[in-house]
Length: 426
Ligand code: GLU
Image (tube, rainbow, N blue to C red; front, side, top):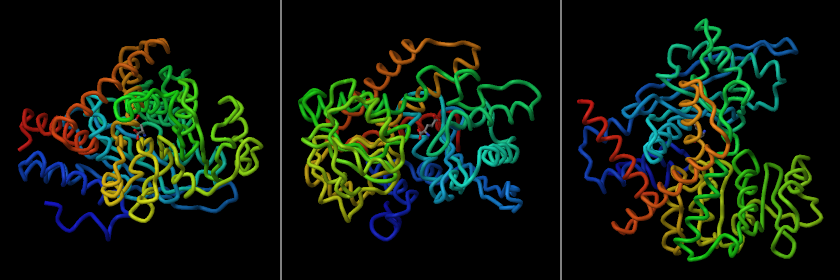
């Protein structure tokens, strides 16, 4: 059933990796070919070309995407990524992972993903705003509170979500906060949304450390790759919960704590890493390479950067026995097999980082009800939902003697297929 896609040749392409994962679950579930066919393909793929006049006078045409994978369980849902390497296959893979994620968290959404091929650091604020607004203009009939609800992803933030909401509302002629999640609080954003993904990763790490390592967070050392919104909040909450952070990285480099543990508060570390290149000169750390960070002898490794970080080339050098996928798709299928053979446990992205979309769902519900929940309420719901999702997947994996990724995707596919069948998708 794996066909020609998968292991080896196409390993760098996240979409073929997503298809390989689906193929293996289709086999495990003995999925009917017609439903497998629907899930292998995305439902709708929008590619838009957006001409934009830059401040220096030049007109540049940017390419944007929105890929909608499946909406059997509810409106499409997923982030918008601004990245120079963003392409259609990234959007396809990420949209499929969103379908699994929303099913795992049991929120009534499907899966989508979009973005623009752009290095946002090369644009000024005004250009970024215009580009975002033009992108929304071109997608206006394919997004909406009941159709497809975007959110932040790599290099997008609450400000950009605010522009999306405003542009969509302007086009509709009235205020539509539920068209997008991850907005600033002042525009109807939810308490706790900005840090939700990192918080969810930390909660999941707590559960995984107990179940797989038989330890508590304060007994384990952790290395985190990436210090963007997800990585930094993961470090923040893990530090709060007592874990020993032994290594971190950002886009400029990586650092290993002197003496094995950063003797500083999260705020100090965070402030120090705001200055882009300071990671190589922290007095309490020694600079290491990104490869060395991934290969650190720690209990838990948390890739929180981009796809394809652990591949067949470096998987055998990974020493951590527990890997939490805070990023989407950081481990390729071949690397999965190598890690499993070495006895490592992987908590897959579709579970580990699902706290983000969960709180997005809370935001959508609040917007539709014109309500505002307290941070305590949001965080309590996040904790319970993450804990339950982890437990369900852990127990299913143990029962069937399969890995956590297989278990998570199988549970998700099963739910999506049931919804398709009951709705009469044939
Ligand atoms: N971009 C995030 C993810 O990959 C969040 C998506 C959302 O909140 O809709 O899960």
